[in-house]
Amino acid sequence: MAGDPPMFRTFGHEPVTIVHAAGTEDEHRFEVEAHVNADYVAVTLGTPVYEGDIIEHDDPRGGKERLVVLEVRQHQPPSRHMQYTEIRYGKAPAPRVAPVRRLTIQNFHPRVIEAAGALFADGHFDTAVSEAFKSLEIRVRGLIGSQQSGVKLVGEAFGGDKPKLNLSKLNGQSGKDEQEGFLALFRGAMLAVRNPHAHEAAAEVDVQEALEYLGFASLLHRRLDVAVS
Image 1 (cartoon, rainbow, N blue to C red):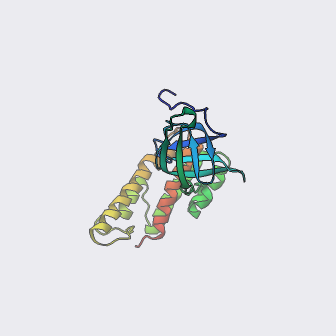
Image 2: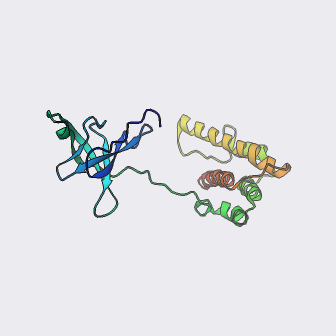
Image 3: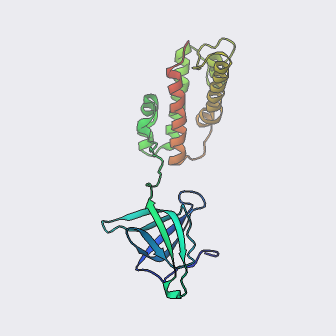
């Protein structure tokens, strides 16, 4: 790659990897030969290594050992054969890795699993999405005893100064904003997902998109769990 530091092969007994800006978007790695001992790492004079860089090398016990550069000293005696860069190091912390939880339908609201789980497992993704959002409409209708559907239904349930179902967990203006926000989410669910899937030949839904739609339906069901009439 243009602009990369050269690969040094003139000093030492083992290849090591020097890592600039480890764990950031600007992370850059290059390999040099080095002599690694218990006190310091020695590399060719002029090697672009700086305090805070990470050095990775083979651990005799297996895997890689990570060292953090604490100090860099340049040794320049008259004899070129004796010139080198001395790197004092400490043990580097393990790389930080954010915990990852896979989104799976098994973690969704039970009503979503009941309505869409088998369809999703069989690959009927479009129908799974349709049934999940239909289950929301049916549940809201049952909670308020309405014969309405779609946007009119959610407006009747969650709209107005005294909504039939209070979805907010907060008080005062924050609670009013929360109620209005969830009303908008339910309206969006009916307009953008439920109605097109019920009345039109909807575009094909792939597995990832279906999973995200089902997650949205699950979120709305969980808010209904805490709704107060």
